[in-house]
Image (spheres, rainbow, N blue to C red):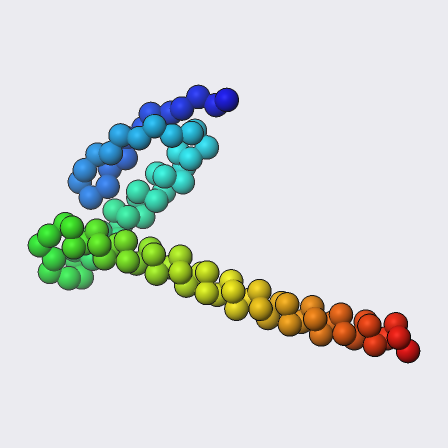
Amino acid sequence: MSKKLKIKLSIGDRVYPLTIDPSQEEGLRKAAKNIDVLIKQFEQSYSVRDKQDVLAMCALQFATQVEQKSIDNTIVNEHTEQKLNALNNLLDNYLQS
C-alpha cells in the first residue's frame, strides 16, 4: 500500500489541500496549471467580474474537450471496425476459393 501525499494546489487564487496517491501528483499539478492559464485567458479576453463565471467557462472548455475526444474515438473505432470487417470478408472469400 502506497503512502498518501499531502499537497496544496492553487486554482483561481484559492488554495486546495489534497491527500493523494503520489502517482497522481504530476497530473493534478499540470491540471491546476492548465486551469489557471485558461482562467487568465478568459479574464483577458472577456470582461468577467465574477470568478465563478470564469471557472464555469473553464469547466465547459475542459468538458467539451473530453466529450469531443470521446466522439472522435467512437468515429475512429467504427471506421476501424468497418475496415476489419472488410478485411475479414476478403480473407473468408480467399479461403473459400
